[in-house]
Structures are given as C-alpha cells and as structure tokens.
Amino acid sequence: MTIDPAHEDLLRRLTPQVLGALVHRYGQFDACEDAVQEALLAAAVQWPDAGVPDHPRAWLLTVATRRLTDEVRAEQFRRRREDAVAAEPPPGPVADDDDTLALLFLCCHPALSPASQVALTLRAVGGLTTAQIAHAFLVPEATMAQRISRAKQRIRAAGASFELPPDSERAEQLGVVLHVLYLIFNEGYSATAGPDLQRVELTREAIRLTRAVRALRPDDAEVAGLLALMLLTDARRVARTTPDGRLVPLAEQDRSLWDRTEIGEGVALVTDTLAHAPVGPYQLQAAIAAVHAEAPSAEETDWPQILALYRLLERVGSNPMVTLNHAVALAMVQGPRAGLELLATLDGDPRVAEHHRLEAVRAHLLELAGDHAAALGAYRKAARRSTSIPERRHLEARAARLEPLKDEPAPG
Image 1: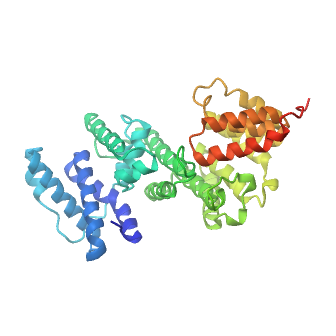
Image 2 (image 1 turned 90 degrees about the horizontal axis):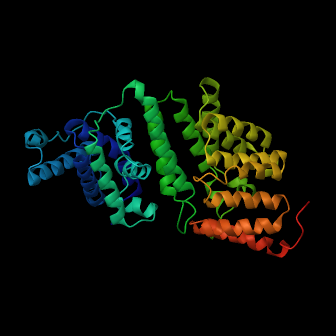
C-alpha cells in the first residue's frame, strides 16, 4: 500500500492535533493513541481512491472516536464514559486548538527512558507508524511495538495528566522535549548503526516538530537555537556522502552542495536569538555551526572563534561530546598535541571511554601530529567499535592510507 506524499505530510501534521483533541476530551492516552493510529491507517487506505475529505481533521477525529467507542464497548472499558465517547463529533469543522506542545510534554514524561520518549514522540506526535520507527532504529517491529506499549503503560501508571506543566516546571520539562527532538535529529543525521549514514525521514521529522514547538513558543531562545542548529547541520546533508554512500568529512565536502536556504534561515535565527536572549547550549552549538557554514572553505574556517565558543559551551553545558569537539578546535588553533592532552581527560569517562568517536578523533589528531603508527592503531580501534557501516568503512580507509607510513618515526 502506498500513499501520496502530500497525503502523508498532511496526516503527519494532523496526527498531534487529532490525538491531542481526543485525549483532551476523553483522557486515556494509550487508548486514544491506538484509536488515532487506526484512523491514520483508514485514511491511508481510503484517501488515495476517495480523495481527501473537505475537513480532514474532523474526518480523522470522527473515525478515531468510532474506533475508541468500539474498543470501549468490546472491553467494557470505563463504562461511565461510554455514552460520552459514543457521542461522535459532527463531520464539519472542529476547534482549531493545537495541543501539540502538551502532547510533546506527555510523550517526554520523566517516567520514561530516553529511548521510550523518542519512540513515543515519533509515533504520537510525528505520526510515524511502528514499522517506520522500528526501521529507523534497526530493531524488529515487534520489539518497537513492545517499547511503545510499555511507554504508554508507564504514562498511565504515573497518573500523568494531559496538560501543560505549571510555569515553575515548564522550563525544565521543555528542556527534556528539546533534548528528545535533538536525539531524533542526531539519529537521523548520523545513524548509530546499519548500512546508511543518514536517515532523512528522522532529520526531517525532527525539524518539523521543532518548528511546531517554535510556533507555540516563539519567544523561547533555546527553541530557536535548536531549530537553527538543525537547519545549519542539515544544510550539509547532500555533501556528506558520495553517490555510492561513502562518508565525506566536513573538511573535504563540496560546499557548493550545501543548502544556502537552510543556512540563511539558520544564521538569521541564531543571530537574532544571541542578540536578545541569555545564551544557552543549543544557541552556542548553532553559533558554531554557523561559523562553519559561513566559511568559504575549510582552510578559511575561523577556528579561534569556534574555540572560544566551545570554551563557553563547556561552561554552559559541558558533556563528553562537547569536550571531544573542543579538543578538535583546540588542536586546530594550538596544535594537535594540545588537542590530544584535552582528549586524554575523557579516557576515564565511562560515558564515552568505549565510544568509537573518541578513538576516531584521537586517530585524526595523531595523524595531524605525524604519529602515523599510533594513528593507525586508533583508526583500527575506532572502526572495530563503530556500528555504522559507512563510518566503519571510512575509518578503515583512513587506516589503510596510513599503513605504508606506519614505520616512519614519530616527530620527537
């Protein structure tokens, strides 16, 4: 079964609105979410032949309500609400209230693990099917179905309510929402496993959902910063691989392939937010991405500015990946040995000590330092640790390139 891309985009936009309206009216997130998925399936089957109804949101809400009614009757679930649920909405226009932000908060409930938050967000807010999410994360559909089911059960057990948190809690919980969207984008931009370097459906969905949050929170600087970061990063997507799927490092990319529209929007966003709001981690990462995006060539990159931004980012939102990238910037300004010294501080950090990127960066800096034998060993170690096939092949190619040079003495 196939569905027109325009229909698919429409269904994805309407999914959080319909689910939000249903949960707002009847509660019981898990039952409502199942009903909405049934309505989406019905639309995917019927719309290609019958055409999109005049009021697609009302159509979906009506079908979902019927499915919910059937489930209530079949299981005698919450008898006291059966009459209310059976009162179907009229087929005409329905209220335009958008509960997307409340739905995102619910999907990112603190009772859930980050993996469950991501899966539930993609399903309930993104409108992706369980099969699509399972494919994106390279797990069996049954496994993903269980993960989503357990997540809904945990939300129910936690007694979570479908409403925005009070102002005193909103900033912290919005941070969780943004982090989940950040995770979705990163998994799409650099898939952690499998044959493909990128999963475009995830990066696009993360950008779409972040735009939705920005529409609801237009004055939030970190929302703007995250959207800018995504746009500036996604702008390089086409240049990151060769036609046969090989990884192309940033320094070797054809910059004429970068998406100048995305870069222009991203630069404008980060420029505006840095001028009018307190600095946050997403804004700083976006600023770093903007410096890269505006450099005419790799050789003309303003590394001192990037280094200054990473130093500020370390103070605002330090984590091992920030330190890892900080080490690269330090190496580009003060030399590879300085970068290697900073990198060594991560060797005892359990969050990153076994990560392939730590060894990949170490290999790169050792190669810059002229220590080809040590760089060769680090590239090989990084390749063994990588679960991404394109990244592993890239690291193996780097190692092969150094093989003839391994017996040269390292600079003293």
